[in-house]
Image: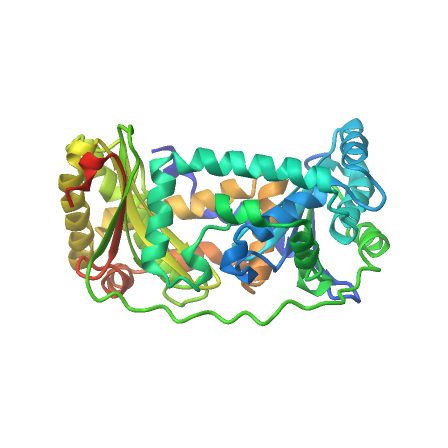
Length: 436
């Protein structure tokens, strides 16, 4: 496979320069991460405010994403139309959005236009006006997207799974996009109130391109330096997660569908858990390597019973789901569930083969180099490094971290977290799929 040609030495060569990243903290607490990449005339900016859907009340689900998306729709100094015209005239772009743990903003431009991009982004973050007309336009777009998602079997299965896996008061029990009902009920005042929790000391900005750190810092001080946070968000208390004692299953009926999506899951682990790297390696082997790891080999390639089969590990601030699933013909649901559980149990008992372990390590170290080929990928990596306090030498240490993962560690973490006796399982599709 082509990714095997990306060696650890190549990864080291590609990531070594990131040690030259400049980390600067403005007096107001905003953290800037600046990396000069002289090989391109462009610049990418990624900003992160550590304030996301986890801070919402369940009845206002979707508020963080809605608030962030509205930042671009008008400020005290620019209407939406003026903002778009000003950036597009220079070939620039800006964006904003919200997720579970953060609200994001960013932009791309020629390096010479970085002052313009930072001025526009600062205006968006500090001075949004939430114009009622634009709020309603955006609400319509959100609702259209949600209605389309409601018709997707994979979306419905994923949503049902989270409700099984987490208590109703836990942020992970719902999706950051919200629901049709909650987005319909959100008001402009809700957006304004949530935005008041945005603070510079919750914000990190990564800037990557053909730029000089001292000039970037001076521009940041001019654009973001006067930003003061007057209101702090409430303390975030994470509800306890109940242990799963026996299999729990739920089916969502979607009439007229010709595919059923199956998702199995257990509680996973946090990103900063010492077992994260063995778990990541194990997940790649189980359901990601090549065309979809062991799951795809057994269910799709050998049996021809699935359109896709894969696994995922959602390790974040809190322990997200460790999940596996498949999209199948409704007539094959029960058989695929049996195969899914069989492959998970086999992996728990036997662990990885030496070949699987070597291939996964080559894939992970090689893919790191690929992620850092573009400015935007470097900026995203820097934000993750800051969020989880990994250290600016992380990408240099990463190949050794992966190399040191042992088969025994992967087997141990699989036996600790994966289970074929205590799990949740959600399906979504036509009634004929309900034979569980």
